[in-house]
Image (cartoon, rainbow, N blue to C red; front, side, top):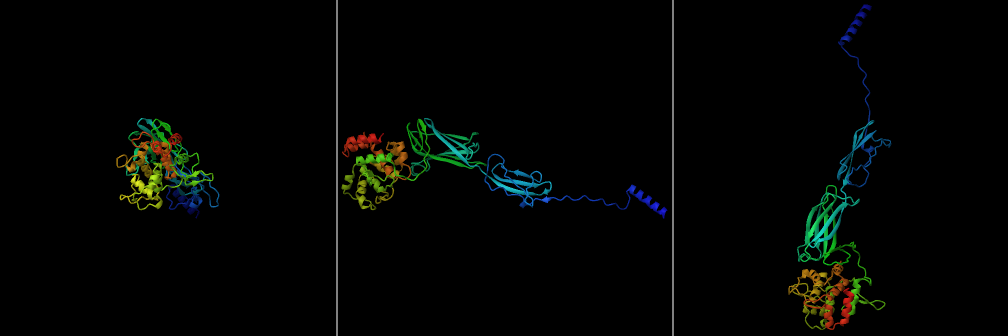
Length: 454
């Protein structure tokens, strides 16, 4: 047996050395590493804030906790990677577990386009050019934006679509912003041929991939006069003055210092304007913020002509069938004198109770001054332009008169302007013609011109 054991041992040793042993000894396998999978519940949501394009990376804070609510350590337990987080659009946050943690959680957020605003300037560059300048900046920080375009437009405010093309003159040009965020346009303006008066000047920024569009629009008054004060922006040939545009407000009764009250007092003294009552001290009240109907406007114009007595005594037929008794003679005389033809082609309707417009009232005044459509002096739709051309309205007064709804206060300014205007073919102002007719003394005409014409 001992000899047999020796033989077997020798055999095993040789087999092991030669690698021909029919079986192998099993090696101990290494222990498998166990990690914790990141879950959606472990990762915080993106903070509920508004993310707006800034030109730099936007990195909302992300917090990761374990099942017990303990915060994990960034770059030890997990990493955070941001993608597409500069430009406006959808951005991605990738949270990846490391060390004892594995797996991946995705969060997304939106970067909005930045708000912008347009800074605008206009001034006379030369005898035939108005320089329009727009600068586009970020609305929050004022940083200039050098990409995109600005479209310049101008809309004449006193022209009805039937007179000239709608939105005349309309779009002027589209200009690319330079590297300083500025666009410039030289507007060729004919100071004799183009329309003077109020314009909406517009500079509209197109926006780009990261910036919202924006628009400047405000009223500018283009005129030929060096000295001018207005609550609106003014562009004058030979000078450039601006003052901030006033925000719209509810009408308030004008104070005694208001030019409308001054004009009303002056017309009242001449007997051309009557008040609506008296105050406690016996002074006339005018209700200058009251709406003015077409029939009331016609009565004012006839009184302005010094012909109220003639109108009341007129025995002719009134062609209009919608006039109340108190205004019957005014309407009849107004038609006879060529001041009005009504509102329909049959000349049977006057629209007595409808509020009068600036255009209608101006047409009345032009006819009082001897200008008629029949003689080709003006077209009804161009009445305001004609009134400005003959000096019926000064730039300041037209700005005031054309503000908002046409009220009694607007009418007294227009009537004062008419008295200081020479009728067609006349050598003296209407106020002096009325004095010569004996409506009031010449001394009162001198006083009126000094008081109102200053």
